Amino acid sequence: MEIVYSVLETLLPFSWTEFTFMKNAFLAVLLIAPLFGLVGTMIVNNKMSFFSDAVGHCALTGIAIGIMFGIENYAVSVLGFALIFAIGISSITESGISSSDTIIGVFSSAGIALGIVILSINGGFAKYSGYLIGDILSISKNEIKLLFVVLFIVILIWIFSFNKLMLASLNSDMARSKHIGVKFYKNIFTILIAFIVTVSLKWVGILIINSLLVLPAASAKNISKSIKGYHGFSVLFSLVAGISGLIISFYAGTSPGATIVLISSVIFFTTFFINMTYNMN
Amino acid sequence: MDKCQCSVHIKNLYVKKGGHTILENVNLTANHGETLALIGKNGAGKTTLLKSILSKNNSGGEILFFNSKGEKIFNPKIGYVPQRLEFDHGAPITVMDIFCANSSRLPVWLGHSKKLKKKAFEMLAKVGAKKIADKPIGKLSGGELQRVLLAFALDPMPDILLLDEPVSAVDRNGINKFYNIINSLREDYHMPIILVSHDLGHVFKYATSYALINHKVIETGKASELPESENVKNTFDLNLCLKEEILWK
Image (cartoon, rainbow over all chains, first blue to last red; front, side, top):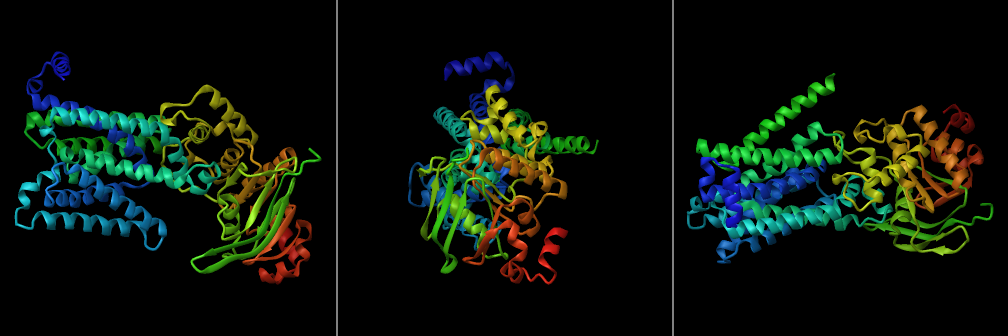
């Protein structure tokens, strides 16, 4: 880690790199941004942004239950809950009894309400409000190593399952005719979303996490024509917004997460107008 | 290829869903070089029948596949052309992306290998869609998209081809083009083709045989005999002379 720090200081001789928490936050952004950029592409293509948002909301219940039972590493209970909700939502949606946005809306509200109720039992919700907006500046060395492992795993999964997942999302019967296990790949994707949300929740925050998943991919979609360009732009926008947002927040004294989201939104509208002018001509 | 014996046999097929019997006692055979059209009213179970063949997911009975030597095959290659794709029309997915996603382990977000691109071009050339290989699928016309899906269904060359109302979103020119390709495929590769269609004109013109379905097989016959069928006339409430009605289309 010390080597990484000194490399950072040599490459980036600015006042913000003098602080260890900023170096940590910078490294965290370098790891989280590509993660969100990659997975976001499929969330946007499959119109699942409401779904990933709900998974984030449900994670609050996981945090609350973890804290209530005094589980030291709350990640276990968050992941558990995110998974239960995610699989619950997708199986109820598949049964076709009610429309998916209604079901997701119900789960999403119930998840966040249950979390808030449990956390505020003794009237002390204020100390947990950090989970709502996250704090990337608090990330520790070990957590950065964990993020590195997570990024590695997600890239591996993305390499092995992307093609099949894409075909399954276009038409499940067509995918089945090619002997693709549609349910298996859709479940992998659901688990992947729950996993990513859980891992990054503490630093990114429930209110912001979905913007980071959706905005870079949505911006990339505005200006790309193929899957390759889509992924490239998505990761690029995610990195640009993450790094510049972090640095600006340092000098302006604003919340890093929200600053990153704002920059992502600016990128989205810019690409949106580029797409509009391009399509009009 | 004259001795080819590839075929699909459906025997005593039952499909039940949520307590309702959707199909019962279905016995059908589609042979080598045959285009069997499944016709019937909406909700009669045509698409369910096609999906049972596709997923081998039925409540009773069996579906058997035979190869060109007449040997039973347990894991047949099935080509399937759906009625439509569920995708966002702005989705940045090109025709080439779909082809390479199917035939390669290399994730398409890392690019396409030259070898696969060449193969995809060959497949697309069969349906006259070579020029649109690098177009996003949302920018294709209904006819172009269905021809791409047909080429996709042929990779690898299937033992049986299933078409689920493949031209419902295609204009008149596109329809002719699509079915002409189907007919030339049947002549070149002789695989049995099963087609769901609500258009009797198309069935008469392009299929070789038909099966009238209403939760069971009401009647089967040659497509050329379709206009004479009283059952077909009654099912579709055709007042005009059926032949005129079909030919007029």
